[in-house]
Image (cartoon, rainbow, N blue to C red):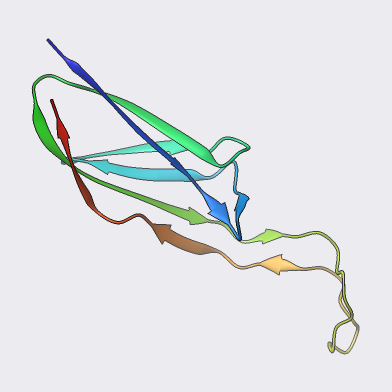
Amino acid sequence: MSHVVTIRGRLTELSQPVGGQTVSIRAGRRFYRVRTDPLGTFQLKLRVAKPTRLGLYAEATVAARELAACAESSPAPGGCVSRTRAFYSVGSPFVWARVH
């Protein structure tokens, strides 16, 4: 008899969802990649053959991207023309999950 393990999470930035990003998940000794939906959520379903303990960790790197036009004045010589958010990486805590 096999068991199904569902790993879920949500990627947010300043409490706002970050969609379309790749999340790398380590489950035991294997690595998987999933993408976030427009609400920033992701999900991975794994089939496990027998009861076990799985070490789990998730990590995402969000690419640099253009933001909406400037909302406030800028001290830059030509003023604010556009805004860019730099890339960053974020990871979950490592956890042990028991599969029964």
